Length: 209
Image (cartoon, rainbow, N blue to C red):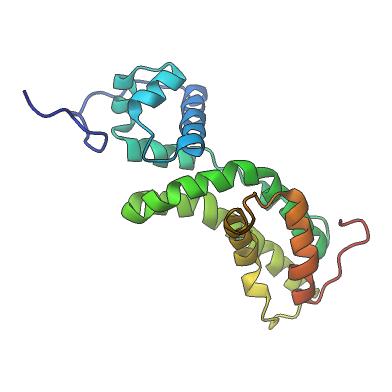
């Protein structure tokens, strides 16, 4: 008999079954929940099939392998709440962004930690992680800062402006290692008010904290 097929291998090509968008979202949610709970190495197609009550053969027909399924789950669960923020001032926008990022920290931080090591070994996974979780949020924060510059709230040559998104996302990654807890909404609001806004020459709104 041939060796048992591994998770990374792709079974013979078969006609893909139809999975509704709603069912795909259920599967993506199961995949990401399992990643947060036990990490990438412990994730298996068999486990996803059992968790989501879906046939393993269906998963393989639709996505082919574990990395492909994880990439699809990352791309398929993009949110984009930061792009909707517009309070009328940069200080208000950044405080609102801190609240939004902090609200999702309990979901996003464990996911990034679970995937970080595996992503270093897989260019495809690293690309999906950056495109799905990191770059969209950085672009959204950069857009808030750019809008503040265009309104004249921040000088175009302010040296702190280019680092705002890196500060917000970087502290999310660092806080679990430094303090053993997530950078939640309260912490990020204080971080923005105490570190980010002063560097930009801005004061927090009276009702911002």
